[in-house]
Amino acid sequence: MSIDVAIIGGGLSGLACALSLREQGREPLILEASDEVGGRIRTDYHDGFLLDRGFQVLQTWYPEARRFLDYDSLDLRAFQNGALVRINGHACRVSDVWRQPGRLPEMLWSPVGHLSDKIRLLHLRHRCLQGDLTDLYRRHERDAITHLAELGFSQRIIDRFFKPFFSGVFFEPELHVSSRAFEFVFRAFALGETALPAKGMEQIPRQLAARLPRDTIQLHTRVERIEGDLLYLTSGEVLRARVIVLATEGPETARLLGQNATDVPTRGTTCLYFSANQPPFEGRNLMLNGEGKGCINNVLCPSVLSEHYAPAGKTLVSVNVHGADHDLDALEGRVRHELTSWFGDEIQHWQHLATYSLPHALPMQAPPVHNPAEARLQQRQNVWSCGEYDSAPSIHWALHRGRRSAEELVAADR
Image (cartoon, rainbow, N blue to C red; front, side, top):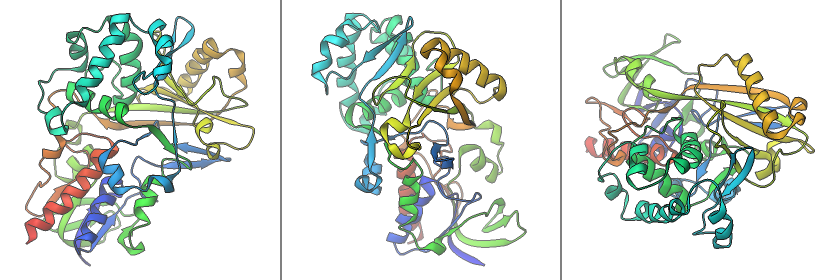
């Protein structure tokens, strides 16, 4: 069998690549190893609950998401801007007073940081919104913790807000990530909403896949190795492709390129889902652990945002923990004990639904991080990559790499 463009991987980057190639008149074929498209962005159905595979959200500001996605059809449900932070046994609110000026008095009195810290938050917002993304990725780089200290933020607000909030984005507890990556994420939070599709995160890749002819996607198809223009499948079948695009996570891309997959460092996370009779706190909020101790990073209730996430009369609670190397049985006990100290004995009546352990949830983003828009995507004469191999994560960059790899390989063929 001969293929025009073989795309290995049916995640967001692979789907964006296929859509962009078809716009250019090419005939791509997506080879997806699992039973459905989406990559890490999948949603499971469990006794009337929708369980996203790990803590995932859509930042509505993302330019490439606005280009590719129909937000109205996704029926996005937004979180409350800011977050609740648990400090000294109490939930304290951190608000975006730029968009919610009525919360200014509450924010000024919040124990999350000093008054000077809150003024500096406005300066940080201004800094992160200056210029375009090219300007942002050309700025002097250091790790985010050093960056925040150099900007004058106190250790109090770093420990109580920046670490718990942004470590939930990067899955890096000590926030040893690039200041450029940090400012990109801060920009996204400042300029858009943080949202979930009403029927689960999987609706994002499903929407993209629905725009492709059905025979463009071949499921249950794992590529064992690549030799020249030949793809050897685990089924024993051999395919020939004029062009090959690797749209897989970093370690898998490295393996297919004949490199050592362990040389691609990643960060892991673990997500536990529980069924509760009522939400443990009010509102469409993310609750952060600002106590400086314990295993929990954050808690949220997707069913408060969308009724589709849980059966009538039930609440879906998501608890997220850093790392993916836990003893899962012991972890559930630790999480329940910690939640009991937060919300009381009602936790003992919560039903554990599922635990997702994701060892390669994101690539590490320690410095140096270069502009992902300028990352080299052509790996060999006929092989391109558009996954997270040697590049930045996020829905925006996944879609961007998919589109750019398609445009570049078409241009190279002319």
